[in-house]
Amino acid sequence: MPYNKQNIRLNNGGHIPSIGFGTSLITGDECINVIKKAIEVGYRHIDTAAAYKNEVEIGVAIKESQVKREDLFITSKVWKDSMGYENTLQSFNRTLKNLNLEYVDLFLIHWPKNNNDKLNIETWRALEKLYREGRVKNIGVSNFLKKHLEIILNNCDVIPAVNQIEFHPGLIRKDTIEFCKKKNIVLEAWAPLGKGKMLNNETLISIANKYNKSVAQCCLKWCLQNEVIPLPKSEKEERMRQNLDIFDFEISEKDMDVINNMQFFAGSDMDPNSFN
Image: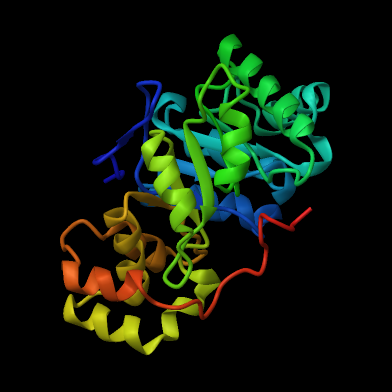
């Protein structure tokens, strides 16, 4: 059955599925097959970006899946080299053409441009235009820290609905997370499994064994219990199914505290403060 429970309410009244499917580094015919399988398994929330170079393939997979468009939640993002008001509008037009869709459900600024508030604001105003036109149902940001968000909030008409950040055991940006929750901005987690590096951690293995679940399932449930939407990625059907099968257990408060207080041990080295 498609996953369709516990949709999360956005600050504009819309809803977003509480688990998404990540697509970075999946391209070509393989991408078409993987996305079709993910939709068949039950994913309805697909996350892509112009920078992933797979929007065309995802568009093909969506069409061939024969699932109703209104039952899918599709996200894409504008890349750093396409920021600015006019450039962003042009980038979105390419995205829409590539996906072969009439609208996307969520469009994000992929990364903030450090030390260039004007460019970030101009890009956001382009997203606001797309939102007002109805070509985008929801708009948001990705990899924005508190300081980046404050610039947007001080110069916007539409508050971001979503902030997608790297989030996994050992990497919790508390200031940004607390700020987003205070402003009613929903958080999403890219690399919720630390690009697979979480899976061999002894602490996580021990906790997962208590619940008769895999480390991956435990990490994804940990995200949800922290009110963060995980965006796992897998090319194997069995793992796709496992990653959806996380609603029959709860991690105890004690175990949540253990995971929440883990030190950084794996993940990306892309810091929003310096990644330009």
